[in-house]
Image 1 (cartoon, rainbow, N blue to C red):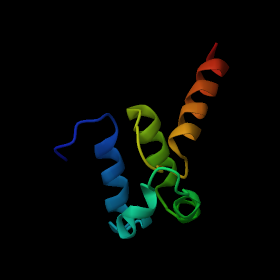
Image 2 (image 1 turned 30 degrees about the horizontal axis):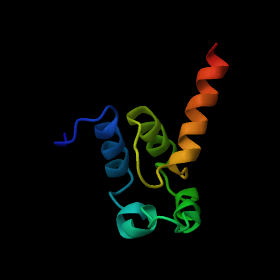
Image 3 (image 1 turned 90 degrees about the vertical axis):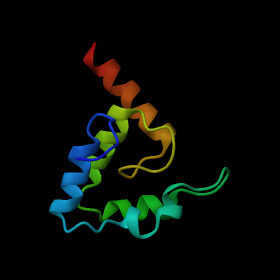
Image 4 (image 1 turned 135 degrees about the vertical axis):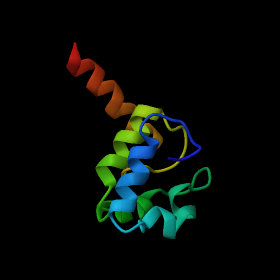
Length: 90
């Protein structure tokens, strides 16, 4: 269990542990939090091969992560996914 309390974070950490504890975002964290105006494409490409990509994306959407690339999606892309899911549920 972690000290961080956002919903789903412990599940994400467990999934990472189940995969051996090494995922791209931990190896190159700066790529996943680009400076304003920087590109998120390198991080998104690394996410494509990550074994916990879907768990990571689900966590970020659920927790409304305000920064960075999570599960192959930028903040704006995650907001769009969440908005589309709400519309589809109506």
